[in-house]
Length: 151
Length: 151
DNA sequence: ATGCTAATTGATACTTGATATCAATTGATA
DNA sequence: TATCAATTGATATCAAGTATCAATTAGCAT
Ligand SMILES: [Zn+2]
Ligand SMILES: [Zn+2]
Ligand SMILES: [Zn+2]
Ligand SMILES: [Zn+2]
Figure 1 (cartoon, rainbow over the protein chains, first blue to last red):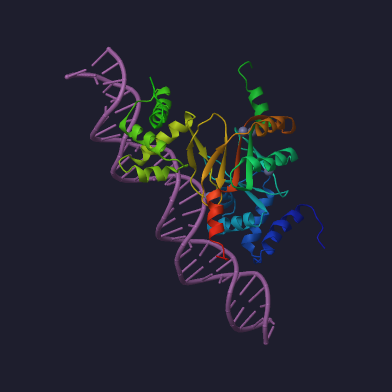
Figure 2: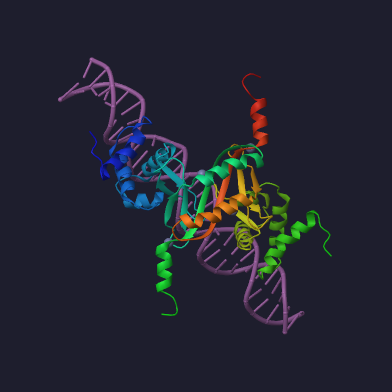
């Protein structure tokens, strides 16, 4: 009888592993529950640092399982390690703040419709797509306004 | 009086470096002219292999200059080194064959219009975007058709 | 509950991609 | 041609991530 709040999200990530026939281990519980506590996107190395009790290999392996299960999305960062974030809806895209790196999610039906319509103009079979919007996030905008030279 | 075919492209990449106030050196000439001979996208390591006479550091540095100059685009590959391709038009996106990795370019005004319209629905200021379409390219489609089990 | 066995773990070594260092070289200009 | 800052590239180092494999453990059968 799952009563749901913070706990239930935790169960979800572990469930994603269950569903793949993977065993419930304390290492996997530590990784998944830590991921759920992080609100922003994170890197693998960051998780390793925050979970010194779990081996690097296990952190990387668990992340890979979660990505394979579709529970995490892996977000390429051009000048650094990929970031991961919980996939809360099936298909979505990301916003990335160019200044602070904060990651957000969005879904937009028009975008999807246009992407589908591209099939006619592109050679080969479309099998998927990826899209990132680079932004200056509100908190970075606020920070730069208050820090302006005009005092 | 630039008469233009293959040669003229070569001049362009070197020019991109000139325009940044960088010196013309034989190493840079080797790197830029090799890049122009490659029709597909390439990785930095691939260039190093193909230019054993040029030091790794110089290959990486020259690529970075070209990217900074906007003459090359850097394309994130989730499970490997980024690929580079000559930026033939100002703003464009890429197709990537999931099977063989072949990279293509496209531009589509509707896509750009939709991206612009997203501003209203996204928190913060949009400063750019990136998009990749994953495909199975025609040659991979042909290969899989001829290699089918019914053969 | 106990034992069995395959799955899992994690320390270590390694691979790959890329950057920092810095003495030697070279391009541009006077 | 002399000068000197820019450039080069061998080397060391760093960073991200994977392979190995002996030790441990989860899940199941009894
Ligand atoms: Zn920000
Ligand atoms: Zn989409
Ligand atoms: Zn292909
Ligand atoms: Zn665009």
